[in-house]
Image (cartoon, rainbow, N blue to C red):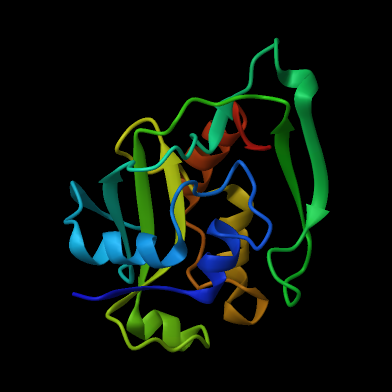
Length: 185
């Protein structure tokens, strides 16, 4: 099985101007090589048949991507309308500023099949393409954000995957994201 880091993931996980809330101490090439040479601790099914999650022990100093919302840190939450790419519609996002999450225990690579990548207009030669990565304290998936589920349901023309919303998964996501937020350094 071969894995390639997609340009979409590269710009988000390894931005030109490094940020503290992205992958640390590792180049895109080293990250891709690690995924191709070190077997994952386990493989999780993703939200659709074309999506798999490879769980790896964190070999970097990358910090957990989400922080629980408490009365002590709620005042540090920020929000804005943002798009992930120039072609997507901006959506409302929120994040913490001024928090220091712990170093993640796991990096969970989110992989899409070659067939799905072609369907979304990004053909790859590898079997799987990395479209994202979760930085977590547990070897389990963080629920996809509700807005990502909605974008996926809108279809590939709006930056999604074309997978309809699963109501139960959406409600689990809302329950999680009501009490957690991403952070920015």
